[in-house]
Image (cartoon, rainbow, N blue to C red; front, side, top):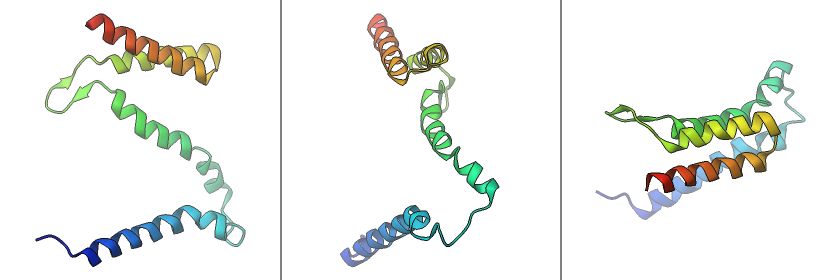
Length: 109
């Protein structure tokens, strides 16, 4: 049985409201609710943690039910990390990683 349109629209509205309140809460109420120094220091690492949580699972060479398998994305990611450690350039990381990924896929044919 499909939910009624009112149910779907109200769910979308409530989820939108929750998302706006949680994301804009610090901008709206940040001056009135002081955060402890430990929380402020921890929040500095949130963008890096979020990016890691998105990128790393895609790069790990594990497939469900198969275990570890070879994946070109892992090699391109390792090359990207090496380029970053040597150059500290985000553009060089993107260019080198994509060139390695495309080269490996082309060579595999």
